[in-house]
Length: 337
Image: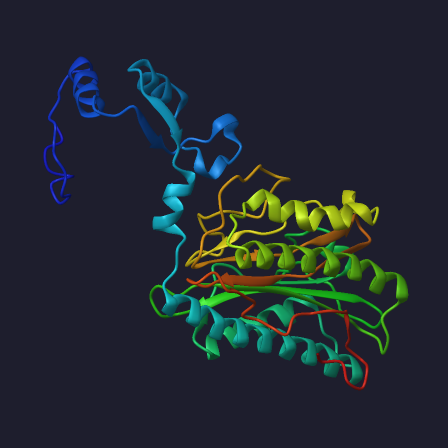
């Protein structure tokens, strides 16, 4: 019945009408293959890579064909970036880091000048900075004081926005890309504290996630240096094991990171053995985040986030370097890193 929708594809067409003739056409098309890859994930370990319904899998297997996951194969076509894309994302990461520092400076000056400042106002300043630099985002950035940052995806709005005052944690998580077609996102999170010094207990908590992040970076770098495969779930384990060892594992309530492409959450391997069990291999010429956090409900949220780009030769780079090593004391004389 549908005779033209696929005519633009360079593929052999097999025409069918009845259900039975469809079965015959599929059987004839697959008769030379013992194994085929489909958008299927065993035990649904990677839900984003599991899109074929169970009935279709059953039908293909009934033909005596082994069905395997296409999760790694599809990455080659959906997550691998060109050298130009990786270079562009590095430029964007530099802009984004500067924009986040500008937001912290705005908070600092507002408090020192006793000018009211709230989360939504800072968020909109960041959005305006995006516009002025030719950057775009799929949604507005996160600006959250301590208790609100305890919800990882909290974001202020015109109708819901807390005032930023002295002696507060302020978390900024922002992501953007160039307006140019094919551009890749940068995604960063930094944390400041509105005082001259950061309380030792908060700094100590932040150091836990810094150590977890650094362990993940070292793990990925060493694997590529040794020309050994590295899988998404292993990166999550490398980070999470450090946080678990500190006794704060229960406060780390999301995966360690996600793939990044022209979409902020790309279709490639995620650094995840928590929300899912991501067995996909991290490929050269791809980008992903590492972003451990600690979240104490209604009290405090902390997160550090960087992007990693693996170059075509396996070199592991951090486009947004230097990365955060300690919470920024925003009212100190020299607070920028």
